[in-house]
Length: 389
Ligand code: RFL
Ligand code: PHB
Image (cartoon, rainbow, N blue to C red):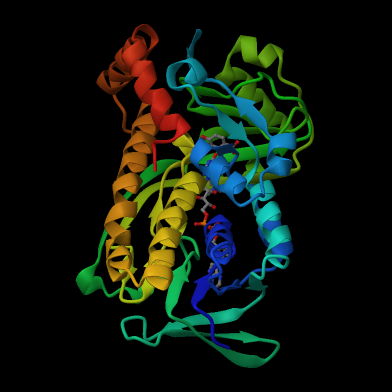
């Protein structure tokens, strides 16, 4: 098979990239290791920046998101008894949208066939070849046969563990990484949220987050040590811990229910430079990871593919080779700003096992300043709602 752009990975990055290219008449094929059901069963992001919702709208795929998603004007930072509301609506004139990654993915998957975007699911042993020559291609196995796709460009949208990033030689690359000494244990349950907005809580026993997917489905997280096991957290223990960490006011509105999903995710900051090598471009989690505290991972994947689609469209429609060459720097400039925000919010809201009394005083001073300064709240709000593309 021959196509213009072969995309590895049908997560949000790969699917959105495929659609943005198809909307400009560029041929694209997505090769995905998992099945569609498996991808739709992964519970991940919940908060969309305006930049992300604008991309869905531009493609004409925002109808269900606007009907079912929850626009939010603000969120809370809690520290002990104190609740600081960040009024993102008043401070930035914009909102975020609470609409699950699962739903975004479903909307993009459902529209693929109609728009001529082919997705090959359950492709095993995907391998990239000749990425620094003029005729790159990939191979994969399906139904006992080896298939080959020749393309002008290969786009690695295959997440943190995919094969694409490994094709960029160490001699030209730099990886920056910070691994945090804790993870997030998440629970999804069909119960109404305890607050109509998100609450990020810094408690003596560790961080907690009250989030949601809809008015009847809640998503909560707690900070746990890295060696914690999900089996050690039966539902009752987890609800008890959430009630303590989120504080009496939130706890009094918290409805308990059986877990639909429960899992632990490690926290990491990671950036891989450059995001292009020859005719291979990386986008989304394949090139960078942020800790989930800032709700930036999915949104960064979307801004990457916005820049990447513009570069590829420039190449095919205007023979603009510079755009391809400039993709990495352009994407990384926004990536690093989101990395900074996610890292700062993580440091502000979590208890670090090696943290001392001074570190804690710094958190309290920071939160005091945020509580009293419109400038500080504006900084948080404009980062949370999403920096301009
Ligand atoms: P994905 O979603 O990981 O998709 C990559 C796809 O590539 C496929 N793949 C392969 N395909 C073919 N061959 C191979 N060898 C392959 N290897 C892998 C995989 O099967 C998969 O389908 O990456 P993408 O598209 O870059 O999207 C990134 C986002 O998924 C991620 O950044 C967010 O989920 C992060 N995140 C959040 N982001 C936000 O913007 N807001 C949030 O509120 C938010 N909350 C979260 C999160 C991530 C979490 N976890 C579990 C990591 C909360 C959590 C708990
Ligand atoms: C979520 O609802 O899953 C969620 C919300 C906000 C975050 C991270 C995760 O910062």
